[in-house]
Length: 324
Image (cartoon, rainbow, N blue to C red):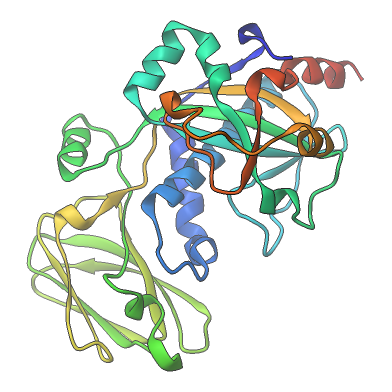
């Protein structure tokens, strides 16, 4: 059983979010895959997962706890970074808590952190890559996010970093119908110079990425593309960007308020504890409705969960590994 004193508290700094957004940018096509409706909140959860993974490895290094970093395996979920601890894979399951009220409650009373669900989807539990002895390790990332253009402008005014994404306006840009191709993509901007990263797919279905500088004096035209996945920027464009494609009759106008921020403004990481896959599988149950709404966490449909209090403390396991 885990108590508030057993929670491993890890500090947060901007380098953790930078690692997360860098991972997302470099793996965007693989992460989005064939998702019909890409979501910035899904990408932020991956940013959070990568950030917690890096913070935990830094803690292992400081505490001289031996571990092995495994290569990322093709066709596995990229939001589950994998470590090996004591010869067993450690699979980190991160919940991102962005409600100011929930964060304040946890800071006032650390016992509230143990109200969080330790949840894993039933599909993931049945995934072929899991072994019964693997370590499911559960963590909370307490942090803030921008949810509107006004939030984004306040973050910029305070000097905080941002990393923006915008998705195509309709599925036909990302998944052209009838097996067709999008054709050449043209981008133009009437505002100040702006660097944009374009993620797309070539007609042979190989991924394609380009970093382009847009300004009022010139437009960009891509080679023929099968589709466009997303546009990224590390600065907020001051005016509209207009995209057009050979196979699309209407233009795609991107206004400043259309961009979504992937940056997670982390405050603290709480590692709650762990269970083996076998222990979790046999001891978990479907979630009850609204059980964890006070922390702003809603387990995915079809998930199974344990109360965090029933997890095993990570620090005790780390002590054994350090002494072995």
